[in-house]
Amino acid sequence: MYVGRDMTELTMMPKTDWKDSELAFFHHSMQQVVPYLNVEGQSLHRQIIEEIERRGGMKRNEADYTHGTRVSYD
Image (cartoon, rainbow, N blue to C red; front, side, top):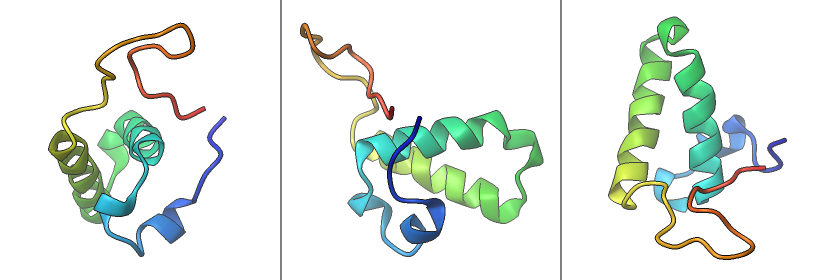
């Protein structure tokens, strides 16, 4: 379950200030409803994707005994 700031709070701040877990969660959530997003929602989703790409993606470089190679938002 996601525990973090909600979309209302996050939309009031630049994407560069979002945590990786917030980007991952909202990207995954919006990806599930892409066919139903209006123009504003599509624009927000595109901005999230661009920020993820700017940061080099969502994969961790190495796994260890406590973390896998993907960012978790749980």
